[in-house]
Image (cartoon, rainbow, N blue to C red; front, top):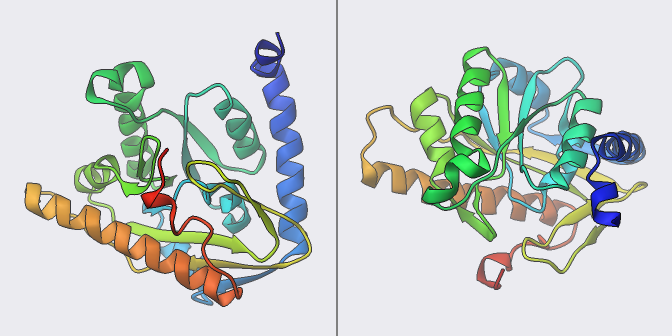
Length: 239
């Protein structure tokens, strides 16, 4: 009964709105540093880009959003995803509801529709934000984001948002929940280009490079806060 209650659209919209208020409060009470310093100018110049953040760290992503910038965010079709989608709308982000999965589940989970929606958003000049992790496999980039870059011709930018005060959950992706009254950093990594004629070898090389650069920006961001990336060991942990 409670599960059905919390999955009711009106309830999820209300909780999502409250969550957005909390995230605004966190953003207002943290001393945020942007790296590079012209972070928002670079984001503006690269509208239509693909921004990747490891799963578990994506909860803090709205802290990086600047009012007026158009970003579409890929959000799971899982029941609880409705709350995140509602919060995203309240924060000025555009949710795209789709999930990854096995090849024989792609239509059921909306992966094909999600890919089309992301390609449309990029074509219209929006940026797309997503977690590249393979389903329930933390810190292993799946092929989907690389295919998106190949089909769209748009670069992938590794990104991380980290705060000094947070709660780190002991779950499969080591989810971090940001807390107020601390320091924070929003760090943008070097882009990864995927050629439209890339073969299987080039696609795999791009996937591995994305993993490497995402690991690097996360490690660098947390080191700047005097701590260790809470998800650094998640890749070797069972889901």
